[in-house]
Amino acid sequence: MLEFLWQPAGFDIGETGWWTYDSQQPLWQAFGVGLGNTLRVAVPAVAFALVLGASLGLAKLSPLPWWRRLAGAYIHSVRNVPLMVQLMLWYFALVDLLPDPTAAWSVLPGVWLSKGGLQIPWWDAASGQWSVPAQDTFNVQGGAALTPEFLALWLALTVYTSAFVAEIVRAGVLSVPRSLLEAAETLGATPAQVRWRVLWPQAWQASAPALVNQVLNLIKNSSLAVAIGYPDLVSVGNTALNQTGRVIECIAIMMLVYLLMSLTVSAVLNRRPAWARGAGP
Amino acid sequence: MTRWTRLLWQAPAAAALAWATWNLFDWGVWRAVFRPDLAACQALERQGACWGVVPAKLTQWLFGHYPSELQFRPALALALWGLSLAMWLWPLLAPPPGVRPTLRNGLGLRLAAAGLALGGLAVLHGSDALGLAAWRTVDSRAWGGLALTVLLSLGALVLSVPLALLLAHGRLSPHRLRAGAATLAIETVRGAPLVMWLFMGAFLLPAVLPEAWTPGPVGRTLLVMTVFSAAYMAEILRGHLSVIAREQDEAAEVLGASRWARWRLVVWPQATRGALPALTGHVIGLIKDTALVMIVSLQDLTGAMSMSLNGDADWRPFFLEAYLFIAAIYAVLCLCVARLGQQLELRYPVHRHLG
Image 1 (cartoon, chains in turn orange, brown):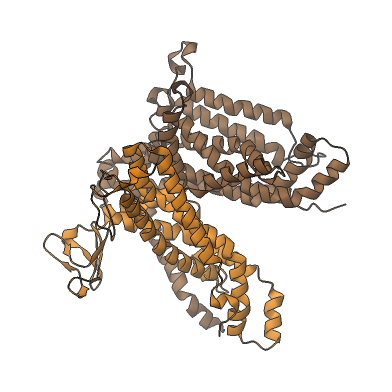
Image 2 (image 1 turned 30 degrees about the vertical axis):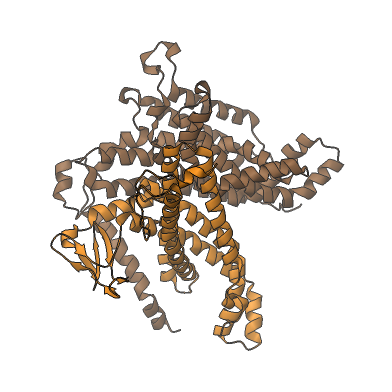
């Protein structure tokens, strides 16, 4: 029933990440490339969204009013606009407003930004040294390249999800009873101890299920990739489905992969990290 | 902390806000061009906003590719849907004096509202049988713009309520087979992204359904969004059906109420009260999700806007202004829903004070 997965895929994929892939390779490898692309954008987006979101959530709780206002303005303007609109906005901004690759913009030494994407220094295993990109006559050469499609998707997912993470973190911190903090203080705990051993472990416990939901949403939202031509799992699966006509099998594969990702994420995030068990300073 | 250290700590945040506000004002208002004047816009060289792109393209954003001489019809449909929504919500938000607010007031008004909503759909569709050129049938392929966004959001929301109740009750059923089937359906739909389901609706439904049964692209998308919305709404309602409403249900059963009467008069209103905050969030998510339909080539607000600029080299450089305007429309819609949710929560608290 699944023998078609070992037949040549017959279609090319625009961006293959770390895989080498061509249309003669079996179809299951095309699915692998799609999954790899989904993970390649989802994992950094999750990491950045959690860090940015937690910072924004704490800023929203700050006793300093201007930090609250800044975080509030960000959260309000991001949350009420569809992710699709934000994604298109990032994509067009990247491919239209940036300079041509012939006159790339050097953000940091060795990091170049242009319509062609972002070039960053990368470890070159073949020569055994770092490859640092440099401006050439027509292009930026060397290092690793991140395409505008990848960058737009990563930025859109990070920014969009961070606004929701911020509200979850804020609600989690507010849900810890004040009396608990006062009790810890009365027992002689320092402010740092109150924060690390009482406040944050409890806040984590309150907000973990909602955060898991946001991570799963982010992974599923990465399928919007198809709108800007980034070949993620759904995009590749849809092409495979149209090529082979194996509708049920292709849907089943995609469902199974998303299910496995969901289960893994839940299992990993529901294990409380050391600091959330109250093992802080 | 002294007053001065407080001020010093806040300086970066205040500076960032001031910088952003100033630049937005300078670019978006001070230097901006508001007339649909292409030459003036090009002369700006991106130093100012060209809001002229909005009046130049607005009809396409509102109505998509609907035939231009018939565009009074989607406008009328939008007005009818707005009126219908207002009539539906009026008895909820402003019950007549002396009437205790419940979620069931004003049945007649609500039936009229449902009629108006269907009337809006009929106006959009038209009919060749009338023999009038102005009311001829317009194929759903030509529907688009804000009218399509509103149709998909409202349609999917209204149609998914009964399906969600069915799924939620199914999952709570003591009957193992029913509970298992409902659980499987809910988790399958929620397990995969909406983008995948939209593709399925666009490519799979026409392949498996007989020709005569297959709805048009708008109908297929509405079907997919309804099922998707129902799966999430069922999970929202399930929690409240199982926790808040159970004791009330048993009390009503002891009083001899039939199952239907218990559901309609006791269980559903109670569960809806408890679920109001989550339902508000769900509706906002649904409105934002309608922007995804452009990947199956429907021209909703986002799709129509994207199409109007992609095909026009003159106005294409002003995509930023166009996207910001569209984003503002979505933001206003979402904020209205959020405010509405707050008002309903205030009027229908979960625990009413006794006495």
